[in-house]
Structures are given as structure tokens and as C-alpha cells.
Image (tube, rainbow, N blue to C red):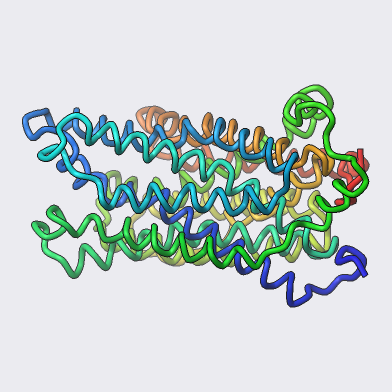
Length: 433
């Protein structure tokens, strides 16, 4: 009996979901660990006589290159994912992440190689960006096409939680290394350890992915010779503009909320409110754990009540939770842990996003549709959000709160739109059009 006809997750479904979430977490860890060691990497890969600000700009420029590579890498991998199979691309994306991560840990520095060292680092970051561009949409499509119809929300929410766990893992590894090794040891060899760990774990995860099976939906498409006859991306742009617009707006909500509430908030609390760094990072870890729980909870609620209601009410709760956090933080650290935990949980509404996206495109072009929308939107809004928020802070210190509030309102409006357009969200049958 095909998996989509019953409502319980089978043992194979749990295995698929676990391996996808584990691989996704490790890929996000590999992609993000660079940021936690950016200062040391700057010292090792650029000449000592350049001004500190310039070294910082160059180091973060190489980090940003990873984001810019996402759309192109994601679209190429999605093209083949729609043509030759989801599983092959799913395994390739983790290999494409693990090898460059391992290579960064082995790279000679400026003192040894001169200008070739930062250039090699740039190449590795571009490869990592291409890999993550294929991994996230690929993982969502892969699990959604495996699990029963009534469990897609839970599967996508759990997977999104897995990706976010990679950021938490990066933070914990950075904390352990900075707590146990001296500054000179970290500068000499300690900064390489997290890249070795990431590369080795990635290769193990790739080995484990050998046990995954191709999705039943893709097998059906292939058997019925219903694979996209034209270029999948061309079909997406010609026939699925509404799905692209919806997916890009939802990705804006997802990327901006995580960037502002999870990634930017600790630095903002330290700078604006003078809250000690150790305290903000502890509260941030708690908020990230609550975000994981929020993603899974959103997925469970989607399966029960549908995307429209979950997104609409979840966005209103996001507006309340994030505003409460930023306003309370402005009064001091008294309620920091409680309000940050609530904000983290409310950001979990982003667990709804992949559920809507996998249903916004028919199976033959699903991977390409999600990959194009998600990666393009993430490259634009993931990159612009920190700049916009930083510029707005000059006008009002509450800019982060207002920015998230505006996006939460957009999320609520999208929920209303979905409520009136249910017929435009096809089920996951292979031959929906």
C-alpha cells in the first residue's frame, strides 16, 4: 500500500526523516561555523599589516560569497533533482558540503601561501553555498514525498527544526573551544577543529544516506514518463508565478525572523542595552531550543488545522512574542530569559513555510520551484535584513521589533489569502498539474 494512503509514519518514514534532519543539521553547522571563528580566520588568511576594519570586511565578504552562491547551486541541483531523481542530489549536496568544510580545516594560511590562501578559502565557501542551496529545498521535497499526506506538516516542521539545530550545534562547539583552549592555541590550530569535526560528521551522514530510497512520487513520475518535458525552471517561471511569489514572501518571513530574533539579537542586546555577552548567549541558546520546539509544534498543528489557520494565528503570536521580547529587553535583563524563550517559540511559525511550499508546485517541477523561490529570496532578504535593521536603528532603537512586526502582519495576511485559495494548493500526488 502506498505510503500516502495511510496516516501513520512507518519505520522507513522515521528513518528517512531522521537521516534528512541529521544531514541538514550538519550542513547548517558546516555553513555557519565560519562566522563563530571569523576573527581568527581574518588574522590567519589576511596580511597582518592591513587595517582591522578592512580585514573584517574581507573575512565577512568571503562569508557572504556562500550566500551569493546559493541560488545558482540550488537551481542546478534542483534541475537534476527533477530530472534524474531526488536521492542522488540529496547525497551530492552533503558531499559538496563535507569536502570543502574538511578542506577549510586543512588550508595553509597567508603566512604559507600568501594571496592564494584567501582565494582558496573563497572557493571553498562558494562550494559550501552551492551545497546548502541544494540541501534545504531538496530535504523538504524528499521527506514530503516520502511520508503520508496527513503527516507532511510534522515532517517538514521536524526537518526545519533539524536545520536550526545545526546553528545551535555551531554555537555550542564554538563555546566549548573558546572555554577550553587559550587564545594562542585557538589562533594556531584550535580554529581548525570545528571544520575537521564538520567535515568528518558530514561524510558519515553521507554514508548513512546510502540507506535512503528514492521518493515514491518521483518513481511514479518516472514510471508514467511524466517528468518535465521542458526545462523545469522554465516551466516554473511560465506556469507557476503565483507559487513563486507566495514561496518568496514566506521565505522572507522565515529568513528575516531567524536573522533578527536569533542571529542579530544577542549583539544588539550587548550593544544597545549593555547586557553582558555571556548572559545574552545563554538566553539565545534557550530561544533557539524553543524555536526547535516551535517548528515541530507548527508542523503538528498544520496537519490538524491546515496552513491558513496555522500561519494566520502563528503570525499574530509572532507579532506579540517578538514585540514583548524587544520592549522588555529595552528595560534591562530582568525578564530576558522568559521573553526570549517566548519569542523563540513564536518564531517557530516558520515551520509552516515548507509545508506550503511543497504544495505550491506540481511534482514534476517541485524541486526547481522551491529551490528557485527559496534561494533567490534568501539571498536577497537574508543578506539585506541585517543592513536594513542596522540603518533603521539610527531612527529608532525599536527598529528590530518593528521590522519583525511588519513581517508578522504580512504572514497573517498570507494566512488569510491561503484560506481563500485552498484550491490552488495541490496534494502531493505525482501527476497533479
